[in-house]
Length: 119
Image 1 (cartoon, rainbow, N blue to C red):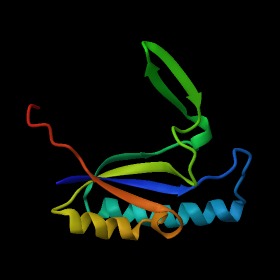
Image 2: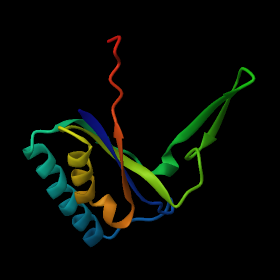
Image 3: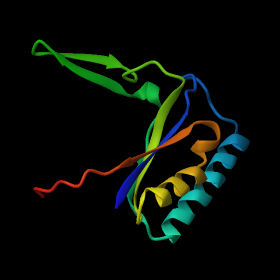
Image 4: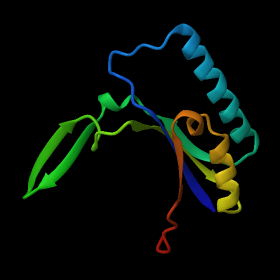
């Protein structure tokens, strides 16, 4: 069964620039995690996302488009990326989520991928 691991982390101000040491540490821990996922042969796709302040939210109300800069909700965490994995069951997906670096300082949401019966 396929599950999406949604990686949430603390929001940072738009002008925040991580130090070279912070960047290296982040690349190392995420590199190790992604290497383990790929070595297990369970990755079906995924991407890192640009910071939340670069996004836009679109709503359609009364036939008119409304665009808001930034996320749909003001929160302490934001979605930083996702990976779709194919594993036997939810318990295995939860084990992989617990290993995620985002689970240490943010959270990792696990969502089953809807299998369209008409496809």
